[in-house]
Every structure is written in structure tokens, then in C-alpha cells.
Image (cartoon, rainbow over all chains, first blue to last red; front, side):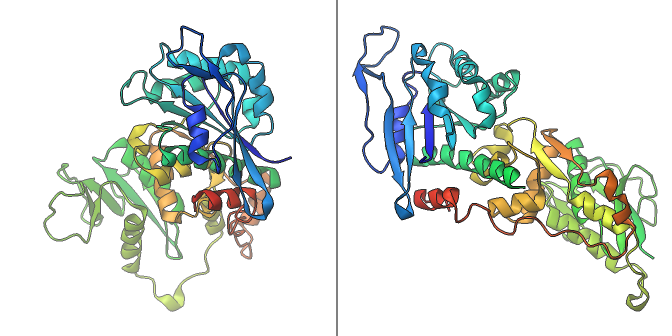
Length: 179
Length: 229
């Protein structure tokens, strides 16, 4: 099975943009017109976004973006199963970003124990509260400890940093399994 | 005989004392001396914050700990600059040891205590909490090092091998994390290993990784493809 990296997070957090930042080709998107008045965007993802990064030898790493709306939460654990890494993207301009993180931690549940995971918080420049420490506290309250860092998914280097921190964890995990 | 020497911190910040205790695990042992941290007044080396009142015994070596840009009279020979760096601290210890009255031809075989110190240096570390901006802001390398410590315990040698970052840099980062109580430390010495400590033929095992295990695997190829190496 080809390896995959998954981007998840609430609507508007930038999952589609993050995939586009590193995918070899324009991502396949499944956006539709948004009729949810709670979302300040014209279109939203209802299926999943998909991109790829081709490796030497013909192998490729698949990039998945989950639908962000909570009614699709049954899909999240299915999509992240056996992923090389997971990025949870948070939009700090939403009403309660820490609660958004809590939703994903709860829905993904035990799957997270096996995953290399990183939390990227967007729009901190315009919405500095809650701060990164608040997200670190929320993770701790859920018994989790993942990298938490500010991210602007429009910047390729920011998305690459998310991936790099995933890979570092994955590599350390692999080493433990080989020992 | 190997000298047992002690270093005392005088007027230093708590975090700096913790950094020194971590540094000592890694560079506190040599063929001439075994260093430990003490609060005793007659320590052989006193590390004193610049400007702190001195109660130095006449026989002790004195080194100042000063801010990076603080002027220090008398040159920089015995000055450790903030933030404390392991290579400068190590050089200070080795400099003091070089003045010890131990003729080279009569130096004893390293006593049985040495392997224990080696084992100590192979302690492994795991993050307890993701560090805040104070330690990581705009420091890509530190973020990567911290990520390696998220999922399992790693020794400094393992962290250095996995990350490709120099051992001293890894050690300084470990010390910085430790000084903020962000690390869980696990000793490498298991109960059954005590006998090996007193075996003069015992040599420490090399670091289990010489290069990244995934350098040529999927993770390595993905890193290369994304320009992360």
C-alpha cells in the first residue's frame, strides 16, 4: 500500500491549500458551494482532497485532506489509519479554536497513539489568542504531546516544516520498532 | 589515581545549574578526573555569576559566568558566556585537569567507576511537553530535534545520528529542555548490568545508529524529494 500523509482540521483551516503547496500536481478537490452559514467561505470540501508527491523508483506518497465538517467525523479515523503522518490544522480566527482541536482529538482517539502527528495553528498573526501554549495544554489534557507550531499554509516552507516534524517522529518510531 | 573533583555554582540561575548538571553527565569524566556538582564550600571549581558576592576558598579555581556581551576584566580565559555552551564548559574542565599533578607515565588504569559514567552518558531522554516559543521560536533545527524526542526515549548519540545535528548542539538542547523540566530521563544502566561496570575490559557499546536508518528508505527519499535534506 502506498504511504500517505493526511491533513485534517475544521473547515477553512487550509487543508486544500496545504496539499497544493507540496503536491506535484494540482490537487483533486471535491469542493461544493457552501450552504453552511456558519462558514465564511464560498466553497467547502465534502469529499476529500488528494495530491501526490512522486518518489524515485515510481513510488509516490499520497496526500489526503479530510472534509472538515464535524458531520464527517466518522471518516477521519478511516482516512488516517496507517498514515505516515497527520497534520491537524487549526484556524485561530474561528470562535473556539481550542475546542476545534478537542473535537479532532476525541474523534481520532486511540488512532493518534500510533501516528506521527503535528498541530499547525493558522492566522495567529491576526488572531493571537488563544496562544500556542493553550493548544499544548489541550493536548496535555487529552494525554497527547505533539509539536504545535504557527503555520501559514500559503507558504510552502511552513507546510514543509509540518511534514518535516512528522517525519522526525515517524523515524524515531521506526527506530523503536526495529530495536 | 583519578581525581574526584567538584564544581560549585555560585549565584547562577536555577536553569544554569541544571544545565551544568546535564553537561557533567557527558563531559564530566576524563582519564584524569571525575567531576561532580556540589554545594560544598571547598569545591575545586567555582562557577560564579559575574557580579555575585564571592566567598571563594584560596585553593579553588574560579570561572565567571557572564552575559554574552558583558565586559570582563582580565580576558576571557575563565569566562563562560551565556547561554552556557557545552564545548566551552568542557574546555574549562580539561584546562583545569591539565594542571593536575599527575605524571603521564604514572597515570593509573581508568578505575571501575569509568564505565558507570559512560552508562550515565548513555541516558536517554523523551519530551514530556512540547516546548514553547522561548526555546523554539525561529529555530528550525530545535523544532526538528524536539520532534525526534516526542515518540520515544533517545540518547544524545542517537538523537545526533538521527537528526544529523552535532552532538554538542544536541547536548545543549537537551540541557536547555532539562533545565525547564520538559524531559523524562531514563538511565541506560539496568540492574543486570552492574557486573559489567567493574569489568575493566568492558567497553561502552557504540551508538546503535551510525546514520539515519531511513536515509535510503521511504522517509529519506521523501525528505530528499521535498528538499528537506
